[in-house]
Image 1 (cartoon, rainbow, N blue to C red):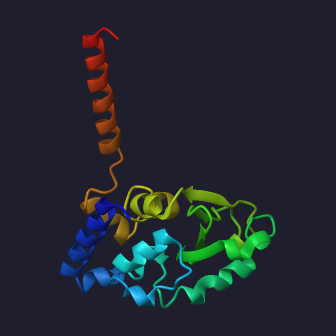
Image 2 (image 1 turned 30 degrees about the horizontal axis):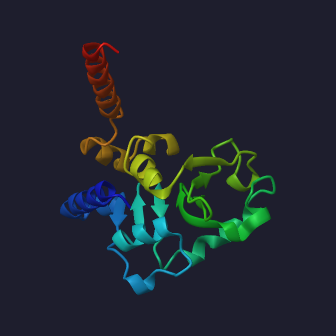
Length: 193
């Protein structure tokens, strides 16, 4: 887990704690798990996250705690045949849910996958897509950032909280990149490139 993501989780946890009991209706960040409570066969990224926040509910997305992780693996049994899951069930891990539909981690690559909305139940879906290349990216963009709106059909209290925290604005990142590009371009022009 990146230090920036760890710091963001701690800051949001503190803000949610300040607003209790109201915040309990839309989010809960568990305290970090004890090292010996995290199963040994858990991928490194998930292990790091569980040591910082053991179970996390944010609006319509919930990431499992160490105590609930085993109990949600039954979703693997219902994965459609076209997906890669039935061929290599042991290569996948259900790490949580969004609107009660499973979120999967490819144990080999650490990438995060889901069945996007297609107008049918997830277990009858004909689409299975990668959401993020790794867990940190998923948490940062989809759980704690502007991607949350991509996974949820309507604004909710978590969306409003993210907005209040200034975490939904993608333009800031784009502007920073544009400024860097302009600065590089100005330097290149001065250097005669």
